[in-house]
Image 1 (cartoon, rainbow, N blue to C red):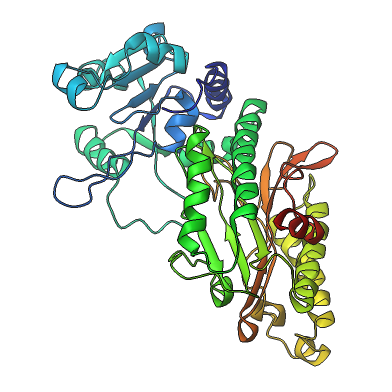
Image 2: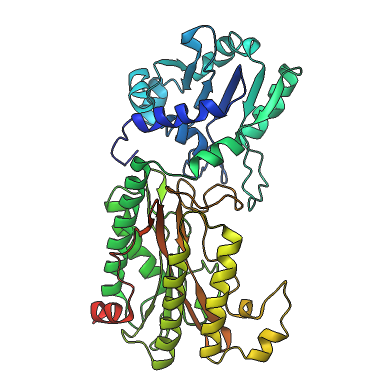
Length: 428
């Protein structure tokens, strides 16, 4: 890992928060993600299963976490299995975690090698009345490849067909939605790295540079600050590309007079920032660009004020829509007749603002949690309105990360320039 060690107290607390949510005499099993293949003998970079990391702090492949808080024998209440190293692995891949290191990171004292799993697990499983298994239940997931968790569920059912299975995801999703203070600090670290990348790009951007050159500037800054890199595939979208919501080609020149939409952020210790800024390639906004930019910024400020305890995502989005509707009327993009005749299932404003305003943020960029749960202290949301005018090749989106507190909210990106005058001053 590149990041500084995280105090194991975070993961100990996370496990303790889980236990009261389990049914009596329950056993929990979590598997690490696979290392995914590419072609020939190639592999993708490893990304740990977020739920396993949340409960253990272990960032290594072939890890298995087994929790059984009510097991009669204390040594079976928290058990962690990690990959054993050998001379060949040490030569080709480097050292893996020792048992002592695994304990230091997780706060779990009982550490075994992964190849001992079946022998030890058989001493635990028959004491359990319920077994919680993990799955990806994110509503936007579209998984085409069988995961390690999916294979394990299949194998478990064959080996232990009479055990009563439960879903772990609803419990971890509920817990992960509210961030602990240590998690907020890790998010702030990712945000500060992102800020430095953005300030670097403001100095670098000018007519004639390629979108991929700007991507490279971000990557350089992120990597040199102990990030693994981008929190998600970066969007570096100039001109008409700024109207493509998930444009990731990043292969076009930035032209004089264009807007450059940057949806780019860093990860740190598996926690993710999520930033969007829209800047003028020439260093100055045109009057029309400034008009649209200020409208989006007003919507963003109004939306941020609604990210408070007790609100609910659908109600929040409906209120943001009213603000956006008003701004689009002011820009001459909508008429009152458009609004009067609109389809309730696809309101008129969606022609220019077709995505949601906010999503949860944390170990996953689109982090887990129920859209029907009331906003609560500790939740971190993005706030990212946009206006996209395809006929003008003009897309403006602005995005900050907002922490909800007992008394309102805190903009974790308030120190990253966003006012149009700030952007122009820094670019010039």
